[in-house]
Image (tube, rainbow, N blue to C red; front, side):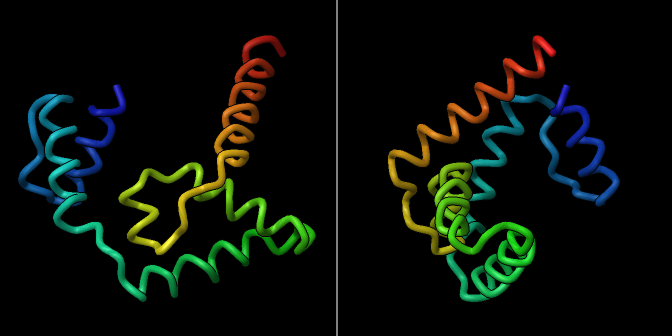
Length: 109
């Protein structure tokens, strides 16, 4: 279902090379990311001000935790493109617990 949605978005953006299947789209995405998702200083210059702006309401002492959680949400290629370090193990586990807990709340509340 998400494939249909993103295919529609791609068509609206006039992207011509959209594959006809989910599997084709997955392969296309991996090839596209490998070719284009590279580290650039401009990526970092955009990421940190936007992230810090969104973290503004939270105590600055928690920002390193949020930065670790952000890294835990990103796959390797994206972390490399933004110059993010691999997330610490505790951040990956914490993210899984948070998402699992939210799923329970959504299901039973």
